[in-house]
Amino acid sequence: QVQLVESGGGLVQAGGSLRLSCAASGSIFNINAMGWYRQAPGKQRELVATITSGGSTNYADSVKGRFTISRGNAKIMVYLQMNSLKPEDTAVYYCNAYWGPRGDLEVWGQGTLVTVSS
Image (cartoon, rainbow, N blue to C red; front, side):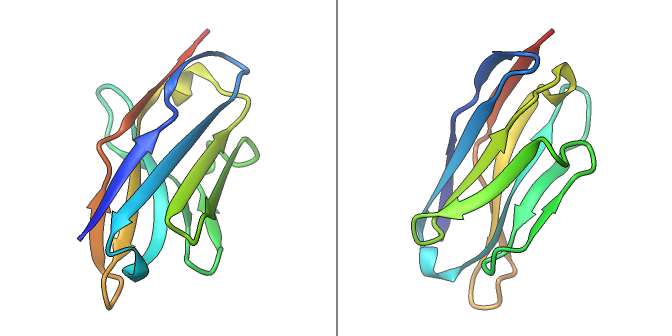
């Protein structure tokens, strides 16, 4: 099993920055891709950014050029640096990972709230 714990959310003014962190524990040697998703009130959960074990990244169009995803610490940590934040970035941000011998088992963190005030 893999467990994910996010941290770093909070309240920030528009134009500001936040850095989210996600720590994986458990069967960490089996972790493949990791990513960040978000869910705003009344909306569906959506992809923000993903990163593979090889370092390839993918971003939602809405965050390209403002957010950066990275991995560290033997690939058991994933970060999301968020710059130039906008009120529409307000959401609960969830860490996600695929793990297992085939990399097809999915796990989610509990989420961390990011609120951007105008």
